[in-house]
Amino acid sequence: VVGRYDKFHLVPFGEYVPYKKILFFVRKLVSLVGNFVPGETLKPLYTDGYQIGGLICYEDVFPEISRALVNNGANLLAVITNDAWYGESSAAFQHLAISVFRAVENRRWLIRSANSGVTALVSPTGRVLSHTDIFEKGLLVSHVNLDSDLTIYAKYGDFFAWACAFASLLLIGLTIIKRKR
Image 1: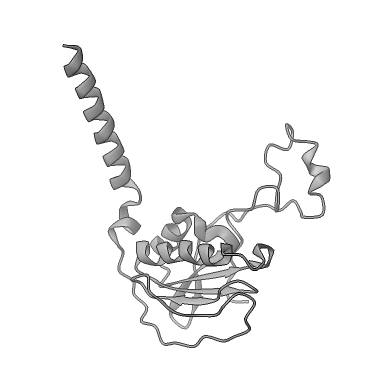
Image 2: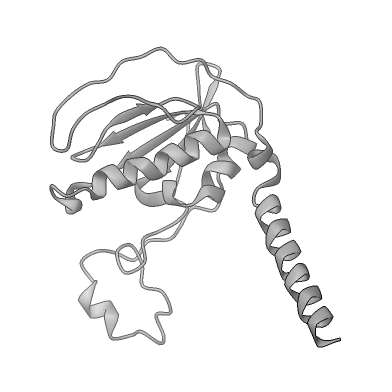
């Protein structure tokens, strides 16, 4: 074993029960699923001089996780997921679409392996270069260029969004004050 990644963001009511003391009655309903403890660090896995940012299941939904992995040196983002419970719906494709955002935000290649959903290769510009279909067995092979530059988003996160929200509230407040005068 040369590296280890423990899932950082657990699925509520699937991998743990939030607010156990208040929701004590739920424990019996989800007892077969488990009561896991989340990982404590977001460190990439090292291989052949590269660093892989692992995302398990729906961790790709949370941009701060991918961002932290990239800031800790990840050259590549890799998602492994069990999309079987989506069945033959569009949800697996929607889950892939979310992964595309993580690739673009961080300008990293993203590989996605799903047991029954959509396995795919996503470029740093968000282009899905190849993919399997739902419940299709397949293998994707490609060459990728791994980068270590940080995007503005990787460096500063949601600072721009928060600054815009603050500026909007400030302008609304100034408008209200001006109208009252």
